[in-house]
Amino acid sequence: MWRTFALVLLLLNALYWAWGEGWLLPYGFGPTPQREPQRLAQQIRPQAITILRAFEGQLPPLVVAPEPAICLQSGPMNQVQADAVRALLETSWPPESWLLQEVEAGQRWRLRLPALDQAMQARLPELSGVLPGGALDACPQDTTDR
Image (tube, rainbow, N blue to C red; front, side):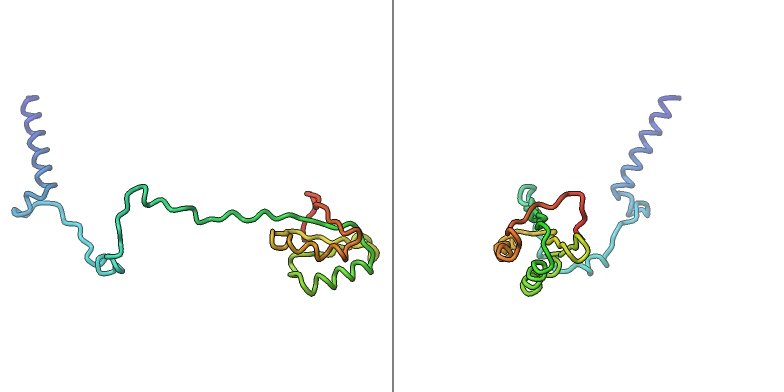
């Protein structure tokens, strides 16, 4: 009985293998061929495709790390000094690169440069003649930029 069962199982496996290989297609049996000719018609310049070996396909990363930006601020200044700084900044600096904050109602002001990249850092000497003391300090970490 087991021999017959093993022989039938072996015969069924051989029949399934012949069916899967397409050997029974002339007799009307076999898997349906998988074709998608419309995909071939949709190809754009298939001759431009080149096969690369594994080491040839490695491209350098395209993402460039952003420049580190720093935040600087001046000490408090009076209204006259703040007006002079504002006049200089409004004529030659981008409006999003600086902020004059009022420390005391109309009496004391502070200049903040919230995100200076390297290009803007090169322009800092322009401010040294207008700022009181000419010095800028690092911004505290717990304050907001705008």
